[in-house]
Length: 115
Length: 112
Image 1 (spheres, one colour):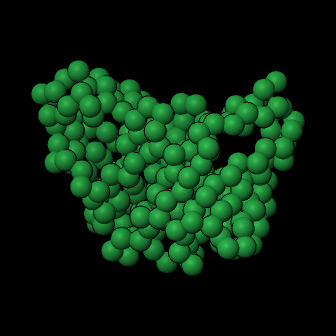
Image 2: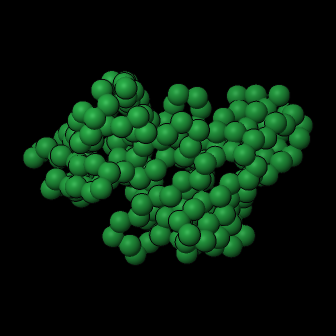
Image 3: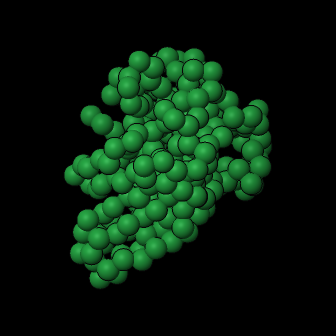
């Protein structure tokens, strides 16, 4: 299984809502990533988890809260978002430390619209 | 952060070769050059990577300049399914963890 799954595919939320994005992989990868992608722009890294610990936070606002409950799961909790947070949110995974090369496997993304 | 620059868009006829250039003049001596592509409505997918020597795989070839300040992704026979945004990527290391720095990408249009 070389697939990263993301749910939901689409999400519409109001600025006062709380919602969560979910990402799952069963490739035994120990590094997982959240990216944000605006239309016609490249993906921008938000967070990196390595061995279930947060290792990179790219100065992301606190209204985005990541969580890695185990090595297969990655969540992104959303609260009090702004309309400018509307974007495609991509999850990725890779082997992690100790490997010569770490190809990242990306999920299809969650299309988020904040009203 | 090391950065890459790519043309915004390119066109190719179907069944013809395509050469997608990338400049990375600030690349460090030990960093790999990575290429991913993003098909419409999908996440990026790995294409190829290399360090110094030219590389080939079933999807593409990667030609790396001798000074490593530029590289070219070569699709030998473009098909309609190759229409995508192609990203040239370098890595940066932060606290022992690697992160990708995506270039702006080249949108490839393949004409039937």
